[in-house]
Amino acid sequence: MAQFEDLSNFGDANPPENNEKIPEVTPFELAYRHFNNLWADTQEHLADLLKTEIPYDLPVYIEDRRIAIRRTSTLYLKYIKICNNLIKCFENICHPQKRRYLRKICDPCIGRVLELKKELVLLEKSSFNI
Image 1 (cartoon, rainbow, N blue to C red):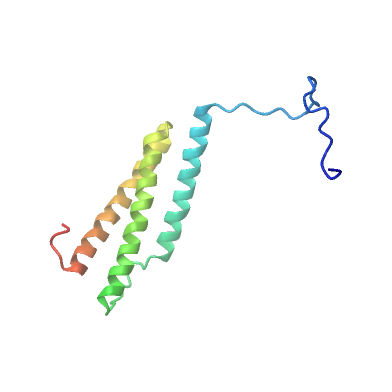
Image 2: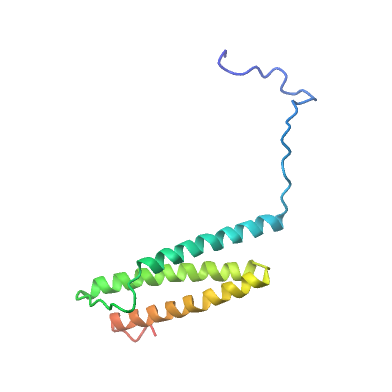
């Protein structure tokens, strides 16, 4: 028992004073921070994805169809996740300039999702997914 702190004055009416004041945060501020952080994370993911994606200037022919499908579907899923996060931010951020900017980012991202979907349909040679 010697290793534990003495808790005999635990129920004291006068707790020790702490000089730090805990800031009060409103739910609006929490939501504002959350969606700004989500937007920043999504921008980082999009920048990383654009760096790793092969540019249109250098088309690469992949002989194995399964590898091509796997790469395209991975890109497709990453772009869908990014689009969903951008749309979530667009719907919840109140700042009009940020909303305009998010819309400008979101539209090409959705276009890229549609391009990748068309590519996947062509690779799988299935008209069922159209």
